[in-house]
Image (cartoon, rainbow, N blue to C red):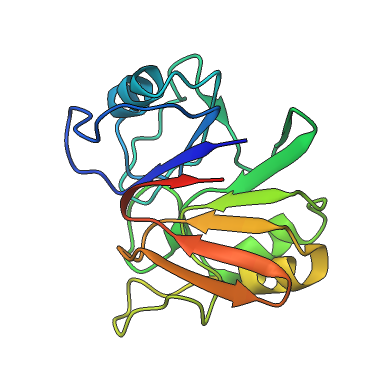
Length: 177
């Protein structure tokens, strides 16, 4: 399965070209119209997404499927995810305290691909008070051992291993097989 992963695209139009992918995954902070344009450009049969800290509170436009605390099975592969970033400012959508995320993920089942806006704590963190990962995502990855954990928010294109989990930070777009 080929996955087109997109994240943190501050544009109203898809400018990432075209190609072939089975699934599009948005890790947040991408307008719905851009998600749909990218999915069309790559011929994606399924579109999954989580919201980022700059996204509107509205539901995703169909056929985008929300992954926040939900499990979707595509071709036998289980996908699930988590919206948002940590609460670094007093107002905004999809901003959570570390303890809130711990409660949300405490009983979340294992998946093969975990989709998040924010990274696991200590993986791809930046040296500011905004782009710091969630402790509970690290704990979840250690407990559930997804094969792949995809995230945005940190504005990095980086690959790291967290135990048995391949962690990919995506800024813009990336094809993953």
